[in-house]
Image (tube, rainbow, N blue to C red; front, top):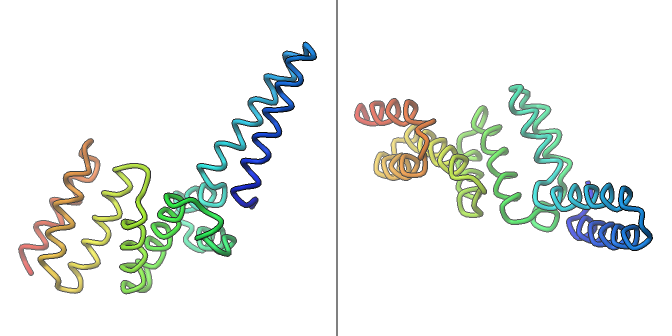
Length: 171
C-alpha cells in the first residue's frame, strides 16, 4: 500500500517520538511507539500485499491471489529485490495452472532475483523442473531437480523430487 521509503520515514519518526516519550517519562507510550515502529520496519521487509497474497494462495484461491498481486502496480520500485522475487514466484504458481510458458518466465525471474528461504527457492526450482520436463528438456530438468534436492535440507520436498526423477527416466 505505502511505498517502501514512506515506511522507513514513518519508522524513523515513530522511533524519534518514542525517544521523546521516554525523555518525558512516559515509558508506556514510548514502548508502544517502539512496537509501532517495529511494525513499519517489518512491513518494509515483508510487503503487506505479498503477505495477503500468500494467505489467499494457502486457501487455493488463485483469483484472490491474483487480485492482491495486481494491486502492486510497479514491482521494481514498490518492492525490494527479494519481495519482487516472491511477486514473480506467486505469479508463476498462478500461471502454472494456465500457461506454462508464462509460468516458466516467472519462475526463472523469481530464481534470478532470489527468495529469502531456501525451501522457497527449492520449491521454485522444483516447479520450474516440472515445467521444463513437460517441454521435454531432460538435461535442464535434471539439473533443476538436483539443485532443488540440495536446497531441501529438511526433506520436505523429497517425495516430489523422487516422483519427478522417476517420471524423468521415462522421457
